[in-house]
Every structure is written in C-alpha cells, then in structure tokens.
Length: 94
Image (spheres, rainbow, N blue to C red):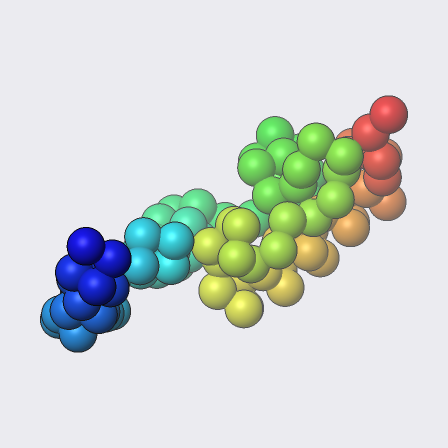
C-alpha cells in the first residue's frame, strides 16, 4: 500500500505541472500611473495627489509598490521631499 503512494507521488512530479506552484504564481506587471495618464502631472504643491505615494507612516513607497517607472519614481521622490520641506506633508506620522 505504501509503495503505491510513493509511485503516485513520483508520477505526479513527472507530470507537466512542474512549473505550477501557487505560492510563486506569475503576477501582472504594474503599469506606471504617470505614463498611463499623460494629463496627470506631479506637483509638489498638491499634497492630496502625493499621499497616494506615501504609506501611513509617511515613508515614500518603493517602485514595486507604486508601479511607477524609474523616471517617474525619481520625480515622485523629489516632489514628496519638496512638499515636506514647505510643510504641506509631514515627515513622519505618529
């Protein structure tokens, strides 16, 4: 009986489903929100727009979270830092 279970496991491993692993399923690539909408432009004087790119503690979100391209992520970082400097966004949240 135990031999049959081992054979079934071996046969299951040799199926074409070796690539499938639900833990590591392929995710869609995120599209840069600033590239997708040409009318959307970053402005450091608009903190409501920049709040989408910071987390609840006030940290700037990374590219993998925002989905922004490298060029626009640099623009986001610069705009958030400028907005913080003129005290429209807090440096940290308590």
